[in-house]
Amino acid sequence: MFSLNYKNIFSQKLKVVKKKIKIIQGIKIIRTSRRSKSISLKIRNGELEVSCPYDTSEIFIKNLIERKKVWINKNIDRSRKNQKKIDQISNGFITYKGLVLKLVYEKSNLEGIAVEENELKNILFRQI
Image (tube, rainbow, N blue to C red):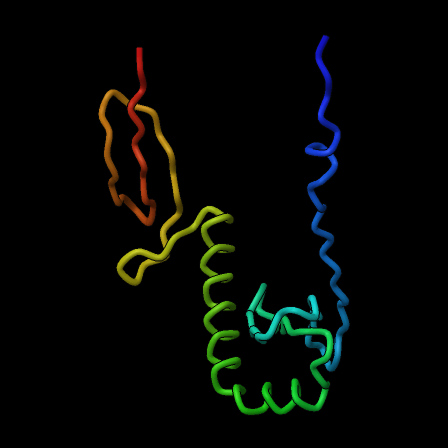
């Protein structure tokens, strides 16, 4: 016969992550565990997100945001510019050497990229 060692199976503690999410003046504030000791500022989808310990006061967070306002605005602008580029590509257009070109995919016996009449042709190799 064999025996199961239940102690090893159930001795592992499951990590429970508790987060409180609050939005203050359009800023998403995520309060994480009490053990964390750092505050992080992130720009996600063009919006500011603050991650901090539970016991961080709102006044401290507001002062931090005020001190980092230049960095926040610069990175929000950068995020929005990148989002415009992604939207442009997903709509089938790309900027190349100052020209807005339509993306065209073709299958051929050759492989390469060509610019013709406001189109960027991506020629894909077709296997026979």
